Image (tube, rainbow, N blue to C red; front, side):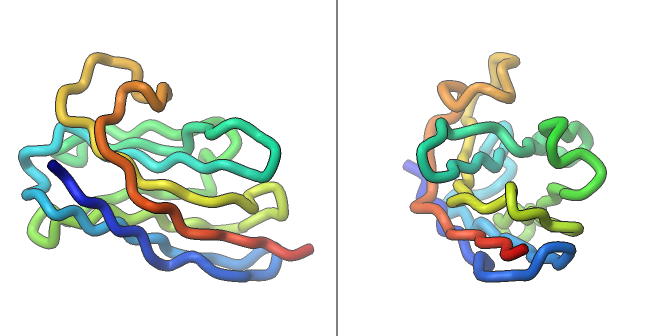
Length: 125
């Protein structure tokens, strides 16, 4: 079992920044990969970013590339998502997810085994 707790969401103006955190109850080195997804009202959940257990491999959705950065601190069992140059279309509930056995589909939510409860990010224009 892995419990994930997100924090750091909130309301920000367009062009602003937020940093999301995801604390895991299990030692980070035992989790193969960590990802962030988001779901806007009326839309399907979509991939945002993923980081490997070592932190070396990182993947981003095209819509956030160059603006968002995923990182992890294994000593703290925590993954971060630094979001800069936020746009109104980034408004969504953001979810952290843990992948215990990576099979290659980093963008697919079915790849992930455990999910956090989500944190709301609202970007005003």
